[in-house]
Image (tube, rainbow over all chains, first blue to last red; front, side):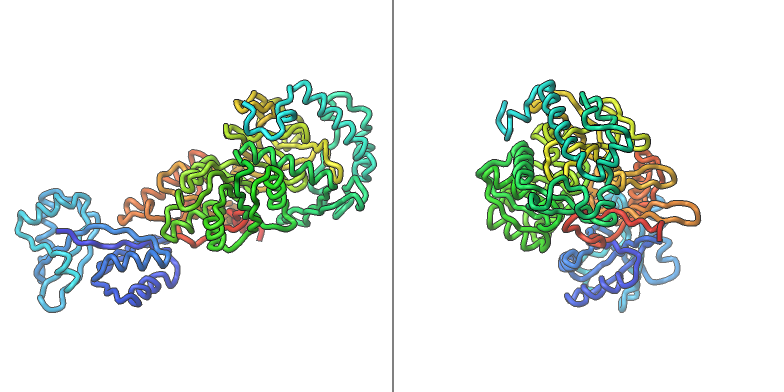
Length: 143
Length: 435
């Protein structure tokens, strides 16, 4: 169960992030979660949105460089130690995490952690084996 | 064997016959220019008279002509014929100071057309072809030169001129052009735009051949253009001071540009000492115009760095071939004492899978140190979602540049279209050191 995420190359200059948000907003695309990794020159913006295809096309039309990647969304109880349990499971199985970010669900009292793995299928098998709750794209986009 | 040769009589002359013709023409040219005040002074200063030239080897005794001479005699001081015999004026773009002015007699225009017809024929242009000329028409020699050459061959000429890329594409498509004339960087701009419009640039147009010139370009750029537009991309060489396009051009062997030696005598010199270098060595190209009437220049220093190959070409032409120029010595950057041509950097970028030739060089001085930043436009092939990979990519590029040009350059990835798309000559260099 993988979730589609889009990544956008952003030059480190004023207004670029706002431009991404503006073009997506105008097309009625809603951003569910985001993370930004940056250096002094450029940044990589990762987005989970309710309509990946429209978001990708729109951004490309507006001159952005966009890639689609697959990530895994894991649901954990929003309580102390929730994150640690998951990371321990991954560590025990020697699954390498490229990067991750998280947000909290509005009603359910859960946190959602987005993982980018090198070996996605292996990671999913490990998480499934430990009974970890993995969210489908549909579920995630509608949160 | 003699197909694709416009003027086999001259283009395939045996070397001894060619040299006899060259000497004859050189001596008659020297007689004519001896009346031009600038040459009168130059000959007097070097204690030489046209009668002292008995062989081509004696050429080394003759003084050089430089762009500075043209500037000092601006606008018409170097002309060797009265203005009533001049039917056309052209001039350089003047990007490096005052423009240089050249003139053509009626015979010069005819000769020029013939020279261009030679390299266009060598590139495969035929009377059936439809030739789209996207050089700007004006004082610049490029558009008119190719225009006359194509007409002489009997091709149908579309005098499109520069600018408005979308309209260019519409005309190229609708008028079914088979040959494209423009700068190499503009050929890529066209491919970019066609792809952006959602078409396959390899099949969208009827083009089969491109004749590119006006700026130095690398073999990598040639491969890129050939693949993306699905055409044969050929190079040709000229400079406005020496006729314009038509000094040299590639045949389909694509192993160097044949210099039309019955019109121009090439020499390669050491740019620092002015000494003539032996055959095969790399140095500055010096040209003597031995046919032109209006403004024949003697030993003109082109500032272009190249190498000559006197081996016989498979195409049957006997005319010497010059390598693709690395660029004008004016374009050469000296950074921390290292000589760098933009084309060298371009070549490195091309060796990297997925890299596109949209780049710009920024030279700055921090304190007393020169720095070079190479800005490369990012695209989907070289954009990674993981920072680790993205940085590894940048480091790999920096390493390759360091190995190839012997200089540490900072690579900066920028968003696509951050750089101006070139409609004419590409401006790859921003040198902030002298401001």
